[in-house]
Image (tube, rainbow, N blue to C red; front, side):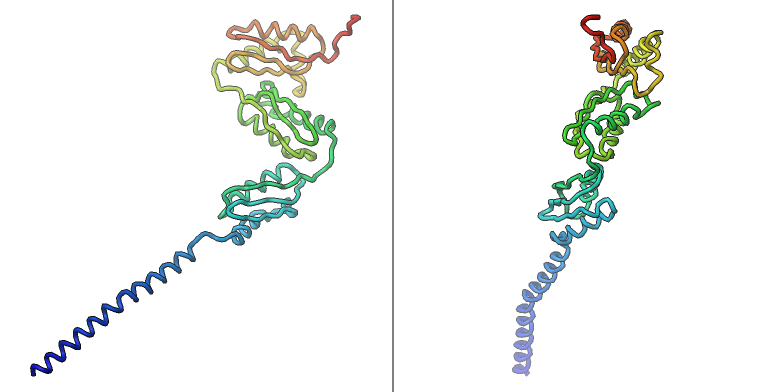
Length: 269
């Protein structure tokens, strides 16, 4: 009996020892499985990111655009018809999974328009932009060089600025848009001065005709009580009267008169 009990004890000890020896192996095997699952959950590679970015360019305006993603940077190449399409392509790709930055090398290959014709056409659009929304208080300048439209001057508010930039970006022939527009500061005092100057200028008998055509008004920009006048008038007398009327408004600190004269007198006159 004693021998059998000793034998059973030895067998039990051996079994326990075997089980203990198996534990590290089971643990390692389990860890290996967890690692495989984690690997499968890692972010998509360059190929998958490129495919995802390309899927976002499924509109006809992007038919000639290609995208390649490497280390999170999406490089866009090819051509589009409008500058706005170039901007939109970058915005779309930037939202693709795995993309952290965009290198936009797209070329705008739309209609070929001379700088002078483009400046005239876009200038007309800007002149009528935001009519009925205080556009007389927008004094946005324009210069086109080699297809690049540079917009400067002053906008009454961010909406007016964005509207002007959108007009430029969607005009055929524009290859690039340079934003140098300043938005007038938000100020109840400036708002009061704007209205008062407009009434003083347009309320004068010889100047009220400039309010008839929204393309050619006397434009009024105000920043912290400082007034600037822009636009085109018919005579030097109109230019001088506009300055005097604006300068006589209570609360105005200074007036800069940038009004151009359509028919300036000759030296002889």
